[in-house]
Image 1: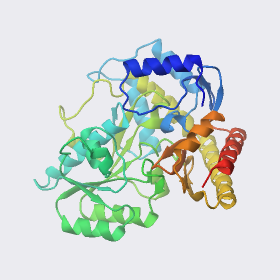
Image 2 (image 1 turned 90 degrees about the vertical axis):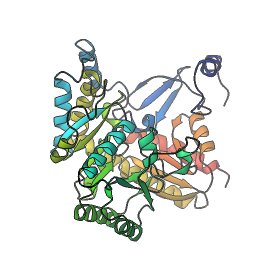
Image 3 (image 1 turned 60 degrees about the vertical axis):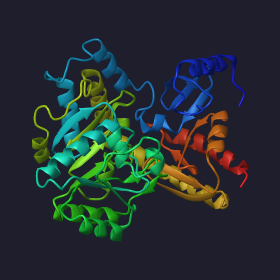
Image 4 (image 1 turned 90 degrees about the horizontal axis):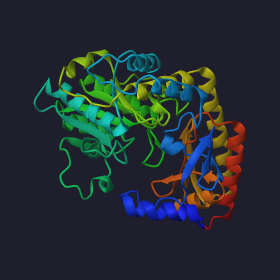
Amino acid sequence: MKESKKLQALMQLDKQYLFQNYGTRLPVCFTHGNGCILFDQDGQRYIDFFAGIAVNSLGYNHPALNKALHGQVNKILHSSNWYFNKEQIEAARLISKTAFPGKTLFTNSGTEASEAAIKLARKFGLSQSPKKYHIISFTNSFHGRTFGAMSATAQEKIHSGFGPIVPGFIYVPFNDITAFKKTVRKYKGKICAVITELVQGEGGIKIADSAFIKTIDTVTKENSILLIIDEVQTGIARTGKMFAFQHYDITPDVITMAKGLGGGVPIGAIHTKDFLVDYFPKGTHGTTFGGNHLATAAAKAVLETLSKETALHNIRKTGELIIKELSLMKSKYPKLIVDVRGIGLHIGVELSIPGQPLVLEALQKGLVINCTAEKVIRIMPPLTISTKLVKEGLLILDSIFAGATV
């Protein structure tokens, strides 16, 4: 992909002034967007099938989000969590309405939400027994990159090079009921929580079995263990319901959320059942910026927009269309496409070859996609995407699959 002079200048400055911890960035600098279309430094147009890792839930220039942000900028951005905050209360009320009745604590990101959930679970467990501080998580999970969240993440490559991780995490094979029950028996009275995703995003869009989650729900209730569902990527309507746990007919004790919550404005949160509020008394946890006026004004606008049935219907409809068309492509290219899976607009295409070259080719052709777990093309467009744009993007993807060398 030949870079323009504008892009070459940006690439040079990036290397001069920024950490290179993200590796070689993809050769584009997005400057603005409209709806589900992005434009780069040279004015080139791209269909967005990635939404900035499921963050830009309303796409770009959405009138409701713009109105909320502009209005808030003209009033107040930040005060402090020492004072009452109307926008924070309104956003929390909408989370209670769309998830389950309970209490919300706002953070700045998903990994901070994981940290809060881990601390809360330990306070809960240690109030019962000094040995009850272990937390079960599952292989190929991803819960964040701060120390506690990184330790909860059951992937050696995430831990590597950082020395001892936080003790007390037990890793169990994902979707393995027998191994899960055996672990709970082995650590009886020592486990304070189980944390799991329902669709493992970084792990390759792997979906939790219904029986597996039902078993976890039952066993945690029987043993006074908290069930924490990581909704950082799946929450805020990504799967066609406001939260992924609602597909499983369970009500967890704690959910974490972030990515799509602010529509691009950094924000995260934990939301819990009411009884857990007692385990975070004054001075035990907090954040300076978490849930400030600007971030929660954004969250309120996003929640109001996406909780409407018309919005949820569009997510389900376009998600079903993408999975249907990708399944037809799987029949056309059986040596290339191993599997197509997903819920709502959280979709993965597992390939028989590494996916990153296809991501680069898609970018050249005006389509933004992502590859995770080396061979899984991840499709997570803005939740407002139209059927027309989905079809246009899928035509590009089809042409890339057709030319792939297996």
